[in-house]
Amino acid sequence: MAIAVRNEGTKVSSNINVTPMVDVMLVLLIIFMVITPMLQNKVNVDLAKVDNPTAMPDADKEDAVVVAVTRDGRVFLGQDKVATGELGAKVRDKLADKPGKTIFVRADARAQFRAVEDAIDAVRSAGVDAVDLLTQKREGAAGGE
Image (cartoon, rainbow, N blue to C red; front, side, top):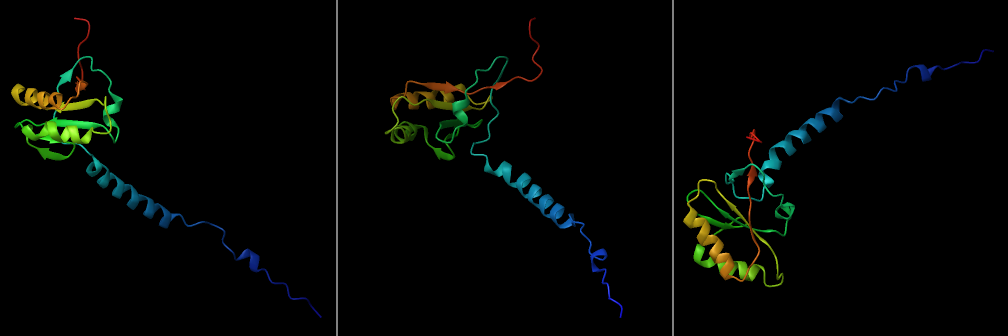
């Protein structure tokens, strides 16, 4: 009488098929590449370019109060468009529970000086003493001339 030996272990393939995982990862990568620019919580302005900008990391925080002045003179508080006359009251309401907070102004490099000055005056009339103007580092600046 013979013993029947079954060699089923030799038929088992232990290779992992990574193709579906790579497909899913590529789809997620594409989704994040498309969505990330849309998550920008800022009004698009071309900041003034300077040689030695001052680093202001507090401006990128979520609770930062940012006033933007566009090229055509429109004023935004965060993402909301406001009239210059209403800006002081809205800033005062926003800072009611946060005294001593800094307001950041993002002004377009080609904005009229009068529009930027009016926005800063409106913020100052709300009782804010700390107003910082955001700038951008000039690329390829020649130093030491």
